[in-house]
Image 1 (cartoon, rainbow, N blue to C red):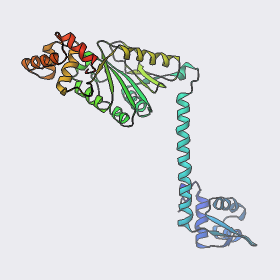
Image 2 (tube, rainbow, N blue to C red; image 1 turned 60 degrees about the vertical axis):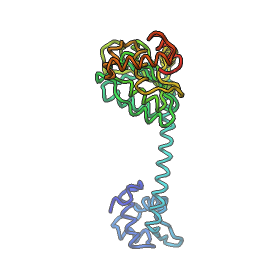
Image 3 (tube, rainbow, N blue to C red; image 1 turned 90 degrees about the horizontal axis):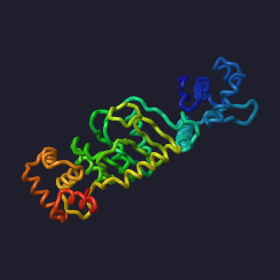
Image 4 (tube, rainbow, N blue to C red; image 1 turned 45 degrees about the horizontal axis):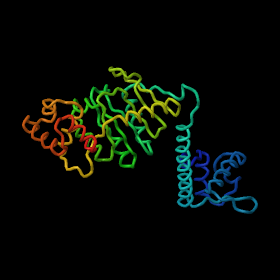
Length: 319
């Protein structure tokens, strides 16, 4: 029981003294010294702490006597006060974290960090997205750490909180990794998606206050990322994304477009430059089925060539 009051920030001396007072209420310092085997002088400071905590009351009179507060009342009040203090500390920590995130220091070593290793990169990616408040911008392109694109659960959580997502995809990788269904699901949840025929500038930007990009844009995956904090470099990266966004082709149907998921995937692959045979293999369709669906889509789009169909679908926001 020597640690009874430790969770409240009081030590073993205070705990022992409080227990003695529970068994011997209205006791003077001299009597407490005799009961505890300690000197009266050494007991005065622990007594003062117990009084400050509301666990003990000093009664008027000579000599002064000390009365313990009912444990269930006093401890509940202290626990509530401690909880309020901890909540206040948590709120202050959040505010300080925001100040740290947005405060430029002017020193390169603090404006740029290296994130090394797949586990660390994945943790940082999740942290960036889960901490976003308004917008996340992503360029999704190879090379991928695991050799193929990975599902991004933090995006679904952020979209559910109302965070806006803008994603630019490397068009060939959509077909190579059969990602059209996954992308369309993200669009259904609120993602704004576009594609470019060839892009090698993988990046993620959150709220214009932090960005992460590979150490190199070469084909090989280095397993190292650069974390960029508010700075002219971050502003340049953000401007670069916006320029790419303007050039990219929208993915996704118009709200009133009467398209099946399969038709959307066909148009998406068509726009990425895939040949009919490749589309058939990717979607596991018979050649006749694909030809029939393409003919129907071209009629609906008033197009005479596949190129025109892709162009019209893009203009209408179908892809």
